[in-house]
Image (tube, rainbow, N blue to C red; front, side, top):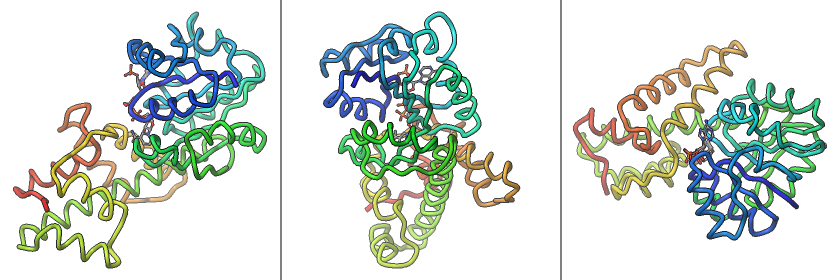
Amino acid sequence: MRISFLGLGAIGTPMAVHVAARHDLTVWNRTGEKATRFAAVQGTRAAGTPREAVQGAEVVICCLSTSRDVESLLDGADGILAGLAKGVLFIDCTSGDPETSRRIAARLAPRGVDFVDAPVSGGVSGAESASLAVMVGGSAEAFGRARPVLECFGKRIEHIGPVGSGDALKAVNNALLAVNILASGEGLAALVKAGVPAAKALEIINASSGRSFVTESLVPARVLNGSWPRTFRLALLDKDVGIAVGLLEQTGVAGPMLRLAGDQFHAARQRLDAEADYMEAIRLIERDAGTEIRG
Ligand code: NDP
């Protein structure tokens, strides 16, 4: 199939590598050198504009920071709409917001272009091993068309409901992740200060009812060993929690827990640099508490 992939960021790049292995791929990235480098290494084409990227494509995949970024690429002489043919399937793997996704879908529909929101979960390592979970919003027919493409990098691929429902589920998932990060950081910092070694505390929590993906995987691999890798920008998790809080507002759910997590991540975003990793929220907890959670 002729596929275009727009957005070669931290997770978009390994996803595009898997698409390139199975399909005839053209890539585009705002910072053009990334696309040129990708094309040289993977043997694909690099387009100079979004219009050029989608010309002749049967499927277009986007993986940008926000839905608004995707929307901003639609218009103009070099925009996506200028190059899109009738019958194309548009798959947006951005962790987006439901409202903007519905707006994009409504603009594409009169042109005979099907849209699905298809945010992913599993991180950069999940993208590298083609084992991402994919939450798809769109018609059953569009999901049926998207599935074989999503299988390039996805393992658990689920149709959630109409356009926007994949985005909504992904945002709530990441809001729960944010709560777990903050709560784990706070609890462990207090335990260390109370004289309980962090490694021992984690070992017991992970055999008990307070365990989570954060305590089982993320804290041991990133905090205990002090490695703090940068794979998922904190600013993006802040964006996701903000989308979840928006969902609470739209549905009339009070949600003080998720709102507090949103406020905390928003404040963390202001205190850290733009490239800071999401787990560095725990670094701020350590700094404020005057301690370190290390093995
Ligand atoms: P990055 O910050 O690494 O990359 C963002 C990408 O979007 C880059 O290609 C960037 O281009 C492009 N971009 C941003 N704004 C615009 C714009 N206005 N116009 C055109 N292109 C733009 O993000 P990730 O790859 O980590 O994340 C991409 C999406 O996937 C996000 O929605 C994120 O929440 C989600 N996600 C990320 C995960 C991860 O572990 N990293 C896990 C699961 C989901 P440029 O190179 O020019 O900056």
